[in-house]
Image (cartoon, rainbow, N blue to C red):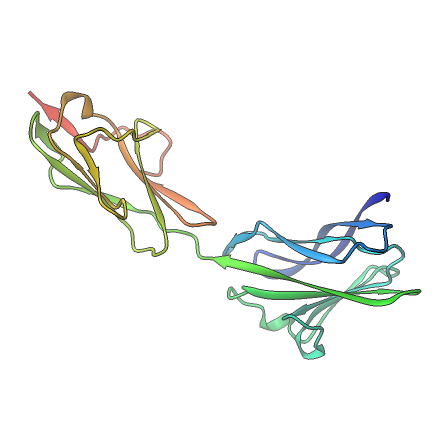
Length: 225
């Protein structure tokens, strides 16, 4: 089996609108190869670009046709791209594309010898996480006292990571995170705990941390004698 690659200017979803862009298509001359669609990235953030990558297309294709949904229904046509003329024609569903683009997409290809072939792929859309903030029971404590840090975020379905001095926190015996990792209790506080503290929230597609700057001058936890 030999494998070839081709770049063709065909319509893809980018930035949650339809624009002609470069789609990298792979095809194998083996007849057992099946047309498939892959979303890159698998989880797309709203407002960012996403590529629907097509694998195993045939040679000498005449037309690419994109549809919203799991079938090639004319009323859900997004765009048609003719290889011979390199003309991109919007379909009936073009004006209905919104930020709610999660779901299945179907590609129909047309070959002069083998007729049409279809494949469907799924696009997962995730809202970007918002900036979190840190709340401390006390930003200035003395040794042997206790403090609780809480990472405040309005997002759901997130993971939280605590960062001290730009490094992931290594939990010690006197440090106890809550079950969801939103709160971190330090009891007792020691002098070495006086350092820059950040919390990072993330979902499968994006992450944010507070403070957002790469270099932060403020310190959230200080220890006095």
